[in-house]
Length: 174
Image (tube, rainbow, N blue to C red; front, side):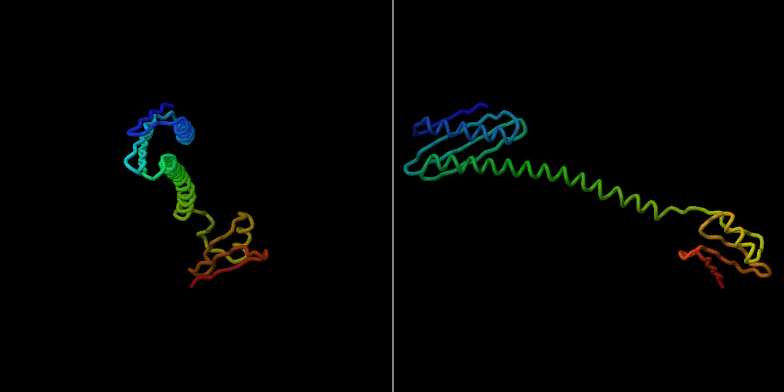
């Protein structure tokens, strides 16, 4: 941490120097990198003006404040810089979280769409004409969910399926 204090038409008291060092250490903790701070104090009639320039590895922040008290001006200026640092960290954190959320949201929906689009072929049918009893035997032998067959003596199709109650269901399309 490197702090440069400059005073224009004012004196730098040990109290001001100690306050600036304390607040600069807090900034350094927030940023996570060593900082270089240039603090310019100036007095013009009844106005006490403070200008703070902070440079770090990733950011350069500036704040200027003017009040009737020099310590009050320093406090407000440091508060402004800390607020901007916290806001920037929050945005960065939210951006990272948003990317993770988008990956989580997009991945399952892509899998669901894939499952909807997939067509699975099945050999649960018989081309030769058969009676209902023969179709039930074939259905039990194959242990499938659905069996399609041609009805004996006609060109119509029949579909046998297993119901939830354990019985058989028969669909005869027209």
